[in-house]
Length: 271
Figure 1 (cartoon, one colour):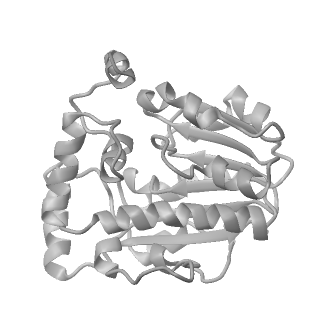
Figure 2: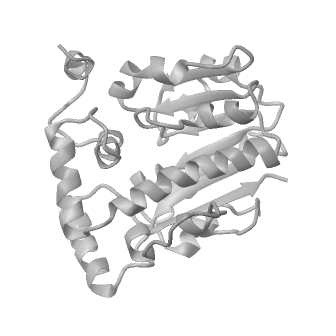
């Protein structure tokens, strides 16, 4: 029996889950039929959208390197971790600074079953994981593992990468972000990415909204203004809010079609 099969009793494998769907899009094997069916249905409507998934994964690495190498951050709170794959946050951060401390948060029991892949750490650093939900920020802030892993008197990078768009409703994400950021000291950072319809042609925007209204997608899009508002009170670092593929791209990055990427990115300092 595989690990995926052995944990299936603890989760509802008949309902698609974002972490497992994302795993499927990245070529992983830790997903169920419902996850694959949901992912395929979205991709049929928007062919080539895996470029956005890949670009989002790549920007996580660039953001983490910037925070560890340029900003000197040594503590990371990564909410909406997803299933482990190459270059997880702690791997990138500890490659730059071995003493980096990373706490992962996700609400999928399957991620917990793979926690040992996330919990590998350098001897100098710390890596831990809690099962909690972004929609209940107090469940994160009150978790004993939080203060065991992170010192909230020192700067922390709050990583909200491709997770806020699972909070539906106009303005619904802003309060959750504020609640978490308010607990962090001056010198902390917020790094976030978010799905948007801003780059899609009108017919695709209309098609996506029909999918959303019919319950065939659980990814709630936000436009540039609403995404930018998540950073209110913070100081955006260059290049500000940008398409993920345009946020501090590597020199050898190949150009991509913005309508296939359709994800905003930003990193900001808490003064």
